[in-house]
Length: 367
Image (cartoon, rainbow, N blue to C red):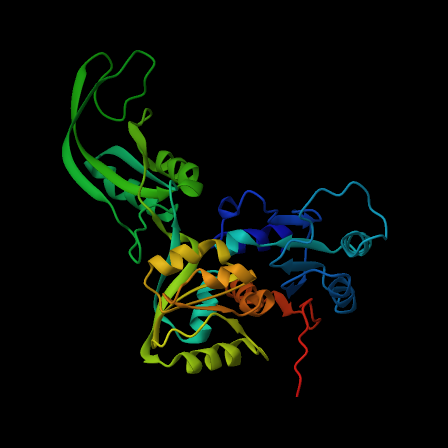
């Protein structure tokens, strides 16, 4: 097993292309081709987490939050970041981080939080825009099934909860092969008409090149006619936050109790109670204040996120109940998510969740 194998396993559901521009997801420390035998899974990488990896003989740390956000100008024991990097390098421990790319995945951070709360009928709160392409390719009837399947296998054809989506229309294509051509059908120098299928399907931007390569590999023509179009449709498989519903509506105080119990929180910050029952909930693990408008537009009765500033609590104006569950608390289940993704792909690989506490926030509760 290599570092790259583990990285690829996670990026199958959270491609690095989905990370935000400010982020630094992916390989943090080490060699992608290095062999690894045991991984320690955590939310944050601290010096103590590296110490735990050393004690447990882990040669890989997989985290949600990147240890290195900004460029390091030197390596000295001045900060916990530099000390952690130095110690990892000294002990041949690689580090990879899956941050906003995992936040933005339908199968990522917010989905896991929503499922822990018991929400159903989940969908992305703010889907990606300008992230879809349409591929149109013309294939002879005898090869259409093979070409179409190659596109699907490479990540094309997914619309919402459906896969293998395409539109197919049969017609005739014409061409005349030149002297240096190697025609699959027809003769050099003569116009040929061939019964063909026009195959149309959608593909997310990050999978476009691999879809085209897969299609070209199985297409029998030496010169393949295909087009790629940019689409303005929303991409429902990636974006910020999640919206779901409870089977039964509940009182606001019961919802707050459920959130506190699920997150293991001793206290919650929230806006003024609205007097409505809670059934539809929007949420965003981590810092979700920028998406409050999306939560309100979704028609949610409550919005659960973290890192809400004081004045943001005025914004809802009774339209929903705003709840700050804490950054660590709303993202804590990401550790289990990362572990499950690795174990599902590599059942015999040792992936252990870190025991070190990395939540930097403590709460004083007066009795």
